[in-house]
Structures are given as C-alpha cells and as structure tokens.
Length: 119
Image (cartoon, rainbow, N blue to C red; front, side):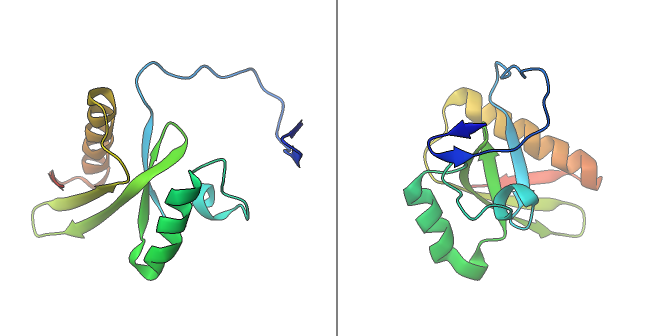
C-alpha cells in the first residue's frame, strides 16, 4: 500500500476496530515499535521525536497512547514494590489517564509486586 508517497508492506487482515477507551502500552525504548523505522513520523509528532532524540541515553521507555508516543516512563524496583515515574508530553484527558493507570496496574500484575505511580 502507498500512502503519502511512502510504501507500507503488511500482511492482509481484517480491518481492526479502534477500541473505545484509549489504548496504552508501556514499552521499552528498544521495542521494535519504537526503533524499527528510520521515519518515525507516523508514531509521534515532530516536536516529540526531537524531544526524545534530545534525551539521548536518558530515554529508556515510551508511553504509547493510541499508537503514538505520548511521553516517557521509568521504573525503579524497590524491595516490595516497583515505582513508575511518568513524563507525559502533554496533559492526558480523564479517559487517557484511566487507560494509563490500567496499563500500570497490568504491569504490576506482570512483575508480581505492587506498583506506585509517581508523576
């Protein structure tokens, strides 16, 4: 498929529906979603890409909101909990905040210890 003078290759599948609530992922910066493409304009606004590049090695993980990079996050493993610090690139609306909190809770379940969110 060609879109905006760029060619995209993909496996043919049924058209996916976008879920009603915002979708959120907490990804490592080394996840294929963030590093596989030379042109990242489809996953982030230009100003956000520049902000991420300027962070250099300080950038360790990305908040993905509805397919776009919407900020960064960091984790700190403590004795009985994991602390997650969020650095959103903009203020999230109420639905987005709920979706981020749900993903943080899911992360806590994955690592098997309680999570504390720091803003």
